Length: 471
Image (tube, rainbow, N blue to C red):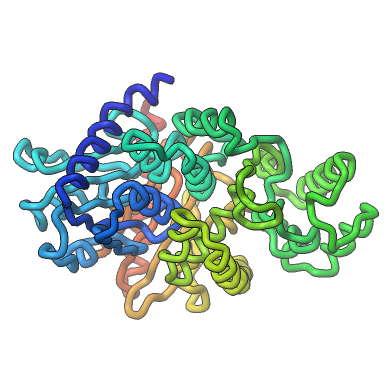
C-alpha cells in the first residue's frame, strides 16, 4: 500500500533507534495521552523496551501541555518518548530538553519545524509528516505496533492496534481505511481478528439486549435512558430483553437492526448515523468469549474507562500481560464509569445551547472533566439537529474549564473546517491552550474566559468556512 510505504522509513528509523538505546541500557521515560490510544501505544512500546531492570517509566495526562512537560525530572531518563502526544508541543519539548534524545510517536498535526540542530536529537514518526491524514488512516497505537513489529517477534500484538483505531473512531465512515487496513489484513490472515458485518452498538459481546438500548452508544433518542420504551421495543420484536446479541439467530439480528434503523429514522436521526448502526465489527479471536476484550469496540471502552478512573497502568496490563484478575478490576471500573457517563450525557442533552450557524456549546458543573470528550462524542453521534455545527462541551475543573469539541467528519471536510486548528487559535487568544484533529479536539481555558473563547472559536470557524468558499 502506497501510504504504508511512505511511512515505513520513519517507522524503521524509530525502531532502529529504540533497539539501539535498549541494547546500550538507556533509561526510557514515556509520556502518553490518557486515553485508550495512549494506553495501547505506551503498552506496546513497553512490551518491546522493558527489561529485567525496569528501564522504562510512564506518565499519563489528558492534556500534554507545558506544565506537564516541564514537570519531568531530566536526571531520571536518557530517552524521552511521547506517544499519542508531543507533536503539538514540539517546540516546548525541544526547548526544555535540548540535551535529551526525543522520540515522538503521534498522529496529531504539528506546525513546528525543528531547526537542523534540534533535529539531531529528535526522531518523529507521524503520518502528517509524509502527507498522510492521521485522523483516520492510522493512530498512535497503530504506529506503535508497526514500530515494535520492526523490533522483534511481536506480530501477535497486532489486534491491539485495531482496538486503538476503533477507540479513536477511525472507523467513523463504517469501516477502517488507510494504513489501518494493512494491520487489519495481517490480523485476518493470521487469525487474530475476524471482521464481519454486524451491529455496531456497544455491548455486542457482553450486554443484554436491554442494556444495548438503555445505556447505548451511540445514544438512541427515545430508547437510551428510557427503560420502558427499551423494554417495549424488544418485546414487540418477540425477543427476550435478557438475551445477549450472540444468543440471537441471524434472522432475529436482522429484524432487530432493521426495526432499530426504522425507529431512529422516524425520530429524526441523520441518515448517515442510522446507516452506521451496522457495518464492520472486529472480534479478537484469541480473547475469551463473553468478555469485553473479545470485541474491539468494547475493549476500547474498557481502556478508556481505566483512563478516566485514573488507572492507566491497569489498562496497560491488559495489553502487556492480560491477567484475568486485572481484567476483573478493569470491569468494575467500567461499570462505575458507565454510570457516571450516563449521567453526563443526560446533563449535556439538557444543557445544549445554540450559538451560531457554525457552533453549539454545552457547559455544566455536573459533568466530570475527564468525561467531557466522550460525552461530546456521544451527544454529537445522536445529533437530531444540524450535522454541520461544531459541538463544544465544557466542564469545570477548579478555576479552569476543560473543553472538548466534535464535528461530523463529512461536515468538516465539506465546509473546510479544522476543529483542532480552530481550537488552538481560539484558546490561545483566550490565554489557554487547545488543539486536535480535523473533526475533534480539546484543551483548557480559565473559567472567566468562556465567552471570549466561544466568540473567538465562532469567528475562527466562520473564517475557515469563508476561506473554503473562496477555493
